[in-house]
Image 1 (cartoon, rainbow, N blue to C red):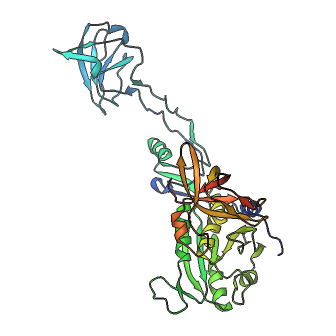
Image 2: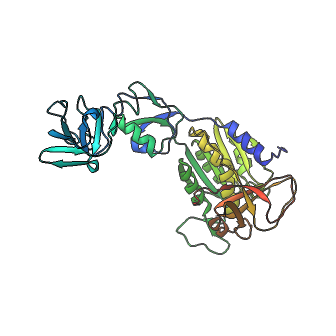
Length: 403
């Protein structure tokens, strides 16, 4: 247990330790943001029939000589159909989305034509095929339109609905048990007394679990005794993942690691060479990953962001599990301990074609306000001690931040 992995190594170990969950069939709207678990094959062509892309007149291009009057012999609304055949030298008035009649090879928009006395005169050149959406030009019947592993956004849901799919097979969302520890904690809604604080970490972690698409299960507070820890952590291990807050350091009442081992959890590492968040434990039991996070609120939120969130995303079938990193220019000098990765809360702005990163405030791990002020995290590499204003560093957006 003396193994202390570096930042990237710890994340690799965690991701290698978790596997994708099983699948379920859910209603279409419930599939948004989920990962597709089965290929979807188109049951029909899209469009299903050739139709007009404009309100206008269905014609044969060769009939549309400048100034020639074409008798209008029929009218087709969206959802309707032609009642007469388009014969040479005639036109049919047609609305957007209406099926194009046989023999029609072009649609002339209303704004490019003049209708008078039951006939239409076309202005300008008409090209064959203009403003006609042909059957199957988007999707062909029998084509695989969505492959396993595809993230279902509103656009994919539109395609599924176009193909008549009311449900979708997706990777199941993990149930994530959340346990806070400590006699100093009181439940939300209670007035804290002397030396007590509200159990806020459980709610920030639950919100973060929701944000990545998993399902939080709040199990309450484990008090600073072995019996309470055993009872609540045993219940937590019945979920798909377990996250605890506090109780993982070396104090007399830091009981989480002891009880997890007693319950059969294999502790893979119990510290990480990163600040904040060094006092973090990761383990697993029977495929259930366990993240024992520090108790300081910033450390708890950042270790979830950097380590737990990618693991949960992998469990849900996501291919992109780690935030995209990009360069930004520091706007103040920073100093850190060499050999340790430093996570800095920053406020990121885009100015004159360049990302600029300002410190979001004092970097104390008990100051929640800085998490609200930040919209990104600067990851300062372990191989350097000093960073000067103007230096480029790698950053990633903070979960839920808008930019």
